[in-house]
Length: 205
Ligand SMILES: N[C@@H](CCC(=O)N[C@@H](CS)C(=O)NCC(=O)O)C(=O)O
Image (cartoon, rainbow, N blue to C red; front, top):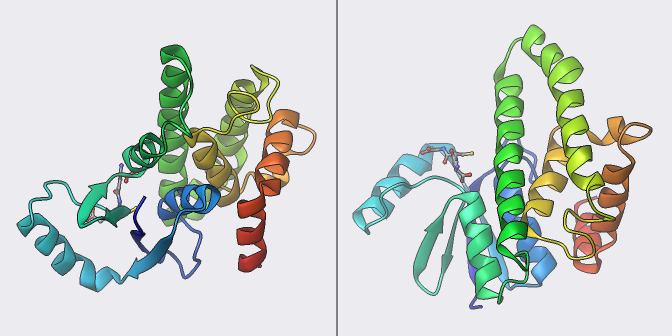
């Protein structure tokens, strides 16, 4: 693929926080040449207006620009990149791909809970930590227990794996996995050992 530019906000001054990082992780893993542009919040309405003038109808971040075209929405962007790479991050059957879609959708539900807790009162945050988070871990553990792993479909990484890894990282789940979610522990270890990801994580430290 031609050089890709990824656009996203810088959330809470932490480079990996929130949706853009899902796409970033895939670009890193695939070894694709890319640039990451952080959009200032007060500049976004202006940029959005210009994107609309150019024919984009539902402009949100993250979006990518490649070969003078723009593509929007996190999971569709990831599917698009996978498709351009001959299905590198897709499943091999309609049934596998249906499962990938389901896991993307439930990851988004987890993200919505996290977003609410992020902006919420202490009571809302406590509810996330004590109720929502354990319930999410329990459910995702079941998805990852369905095959031998380490990834959702087994040996092959697919696009929801990036979302799940990132939810574990962003969503405060990492410390809670040990002893309760062995398949997710195995998954996180394998993910972080992927050569390009490993180098990237070192670069963040
Ligand atoms: N389902 C979309 C949601 C995108 C979304 O709501 N992005 C937020 C930032 S996380 C945004 O662009 N907000 C500004 C706006 O809607 O104009 C996705 O996953 O990309």
